Image (cartoon, rainbow, N blue to C red; front, side, top):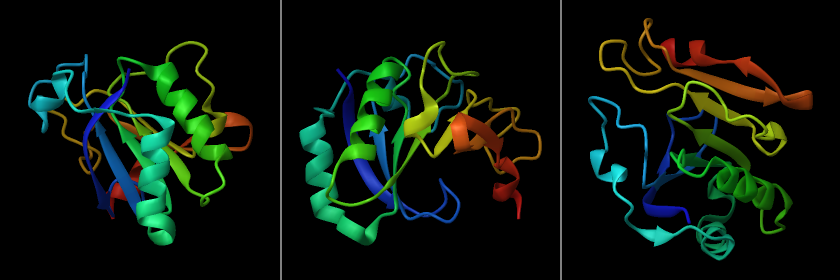
Length: 155
């Protein structure tokens, strides 16, 4: 079961979106220099369709995107919740996922996402703003094609 510890409205994680970033726990990646090491533990409240509905009612049209920050321990649960968000009727939101894995798991369907970040954090390479980063943010387009938009962080 996915668990979340907190959430916040952010403006820099997904370009041109007002994003509700939901921090997920039980991260299996153990990146050196992790900015949120407490998320390595399996802590927090269950992230369910009902909790997402509560957040959508709370923020309404104030957010244009919901981004799952983590969830690598249960990628197909992330996919299931992305599918749910694409079909709910409270308000239209885009869906993003920040994964610390270098690639998507075999069989994951990207059609329910508009954004996916891939790549573990490597202290010596930096995050998305670094010219040397190994991380990439993709906009998911027609048919699931992944278009690299990492350059948007370097303006």
